[in-house]
Length: 68
Image (cartoon, rainbow, N blue to C red; front, side, top):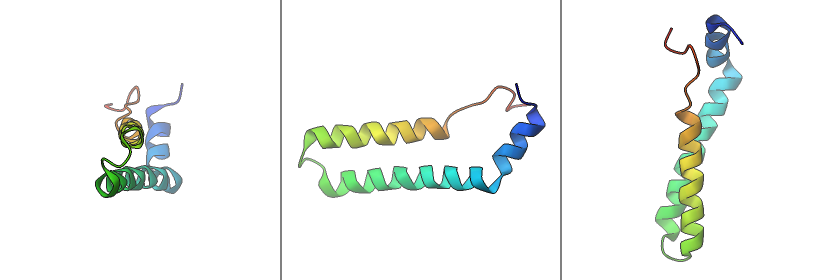
């Protein structure tokens, strides 16, 4: 297990920040593709919705001790 300070260091690391920025960009890309292509292929629409949900789940991940 890592210490809370290690977690804070990780969270403020430039690589971590860039990763989360990229995840947010992926969410926006999914939303844009859905807006542009909605209804053309329902299976693709559902896939993009699932991808967006997965990216949201990454952003919403909570870590033990994050509230300390």
